[in-house]
Amino acid sequence: MTSRVSDMTDAGEIGRDMHQLVAELYPICRSITGNGLRETLRRVQKHIPLTLHEVPSGTPVFDWTVPKEWNINDAWVKNGQGERVIDFQQSNLHVVGYSVPVRRRVSASELRTHLHTLPEHPAWIPWRTSYYHETWGFCLAQDRLAALTDDEYEVCIDSTLEPGHLTYGEYLLPGETTDEVLLSCHTCHPSLANDNLSGVALAVALAEHLATQPRRYSYRFLFIPGTIGSITWLSRNEPATSRIRHGLVLACVGDAGPVTYKRSRRGDAEIDRAVACVLRHSGRPFEILDFSPYGYDERQFCSPGIDLPVGCFMRTPHGRFPEYHTSADSPELVRPEALAHSFATAAEILSTLEHNRTFVNLNPKCEPQLGRRGIYRTMGGTDAAVSELAMLWVLNLSDGRHSLLDIAERSGCSFEAIKRAADVLRDHDLLALATGSQS
Ligand code: ZN
Image (tube, rainbow, N blue to C red; front, side):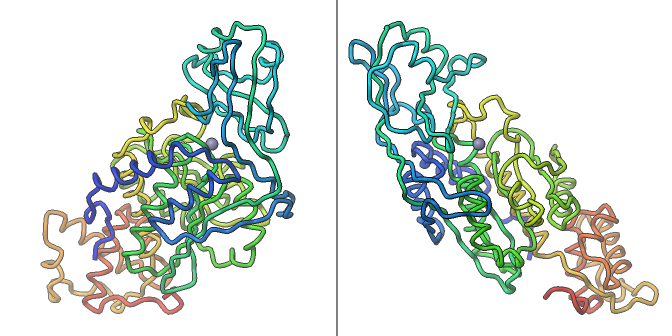
């Protein structure tokens, strides 16, 4: 059994499927609560059996409170001729997220205090929100601002901000053990593709893939609004967090940049080492960042009172690509081949966790005679020498105290080479699972 996903799957097809999901979800106006978020989760339910949870507004969640639910039907600014000069129907980014309802005539000068543009990218619409301060506003391209020459405008935001619910989606894919791997993505951004939907597409693809694989671990998938969603989930599931052995937040995984991994707060957790090992042997550029208390939901999963081994798997990090939080973060920014590569890399990381076991050498007094057992022949191929070296490392370090990942790190061999060597040695009764090694 190989653990290299790229060998088993049609990467092109996976990338296209993932991109199709990004494009399908892109037009929906999501927020941290509301019907756009629900609709998104219902569409994910067509792929995986997600459970939707509804948490009432006003529910205390640690130091926070579940906010009122926001929904929007339409919004516009009309000029003196009754023309929509800013129109929510053309882009949901035109409205500041969580804008309170408004319908009245305003002077041009008052309107300007409610407008947001991005002068450094005059053709792009910025994305703004005001979740915790009740106000209203519009976002538009700087280019369009110059055309607003009337003295008075009519503004309409047909929204509701009322007691309701915060919705999140959860899917537990059981494995042989109740030890869990947490995979989390945020689902709260409106029409933004890389920062949001690429993570959703990767989580869906991984869930579909893992469902077809033998699994030692159980996998818990969270589709949650950023920050308030993870805080809400953690406050409702604190006892369950003791089962989480490893975790990844998935975000910004569809752009052309190299894979970037941000370590967990612990810094040397097994997930941190597994990711580093896979990336080191990937043959592609990558970057590993230390933990910092800024970013996505790893901030909450790695808060000191929670302290889970959860890192963040990305390509170009938030804020480091100019299209971030603007209308230019569209499905065109997200590349099927980048999505496919993110999928293959994440799947290989999870496979590394699955197969990272600790063994004992059953013939520890001097080297066993490999030739007599026909092991050299089974290795075969042009990588025979590498594989022999991997076997010698596995035999030497399998004293019940070193895991296969320890051996991969110390030998400089890929985890896959070490795992394959261990498989052969087990087949020849030279290696057995160490007692106390998780079964
Ligand atoms: Zn964002």
